[in-house]
Length: 219
Image 1 (cartoon, rainbow, N blue to C red):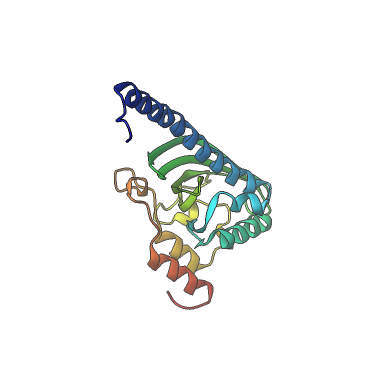
Image 2: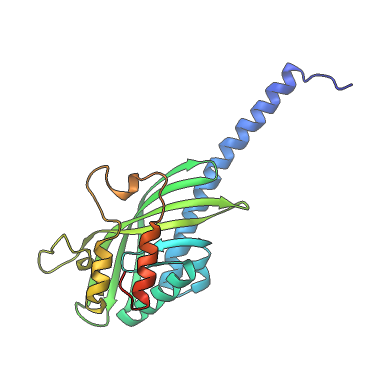
């Protein structure tokens, strides 16, 4: 016959659980920050394996003029940067993280700076990475990312209805890609901004539209 737990045993058990929770939260937050840093370093160093380590294999990345799987994104991003830039940096700043068990919603401000192969010799762009993280098998990684552009260094006042002005690779974009980019998640200065969406998920119709666009079909 098993003796019932004493008050002291119950108190110790509760204290251990509270201590575990106190330790777990900062560990989770640091793991997410480390994941964000791995992504930026991977893109800047052309390290495909490091880029992929920031995503779950079935994740979706919506970068405005591209949407697809982590492997597809890594190939697209590395080729674009190689074709358009002599060098570049992805710098991370303000970061908020809402933890909910094995899920997290984050918003991370970034600034992208580049030395370009054509057009302006130097460009700066600022925006936010809005991410849904998931912890699977004790590993935090991105399940969905949207890259939101907020500003860019411009010589003339841009048309804010055309998000493709917020990129140093505008000359490389077709009319179809610019139209697709404008139809994606966009910055808003109120609670309609994508960063408030819960849960933050990809748009299946947008994923299909880009797949059709890549194969020359009309979305």
